[in-house]
Image (cartoon, rainbow, N blue to C red):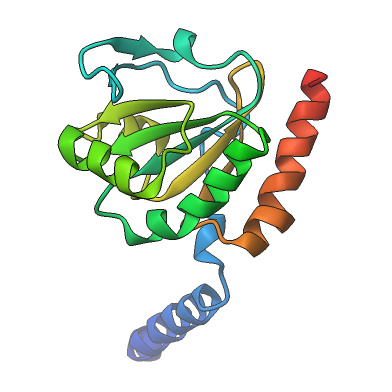
Length: 180
C-alpha cells in the first residue's frame, strides 16, 4: 500500500497524458449539440429591418431554413457571406440571420456594404438567444426542418467545400422530407 502512494502521481500523469493525446485528434467543429432533433428554442426578439417589431418562432418560415449566427465584427462571417448570397440568388433555401451581440447600426451597415443574404434578420444583442441555442460564437449555422426542428449544426465558417459536402446534403434531405 505504501508503494502504491508513490506511483499515484505517475498514474495520474499517464491518465492525463492519454486524455490530452486523445483530444488532439478530435474535430472541434463536430461538437455535439443538445438541441439536435429538438425544436428551435422559443424567442421574442426585435427584427433588424424594423428595429422595434418583435418576432417569435411563429414568424419563421414553415419550410426548411438555415439559421445563421453572425455579427458585423465577425471576419469569418464576411468569408461565408458570398456563399449565402449565391444561395439566396439561386433560391436554395431561406436564410434567417441572428445578429449576435452586435449593434443595430453596425449590423445594418455591414449588410449594406456586403449584401444581405437573409430573408429575415433577428437581433440578439444580449446574446441570450445564443445561449439558448448553445452558441459558442459567430459564425454558427443551424439547419431547421419544416417542423421547426434543428437537424444540423455547423460551428465556424462555411466555406465552399463544407457547403457542398456537408450543408447541401442536409438541405436536400430536409427539403425532400418536406416535399419541397
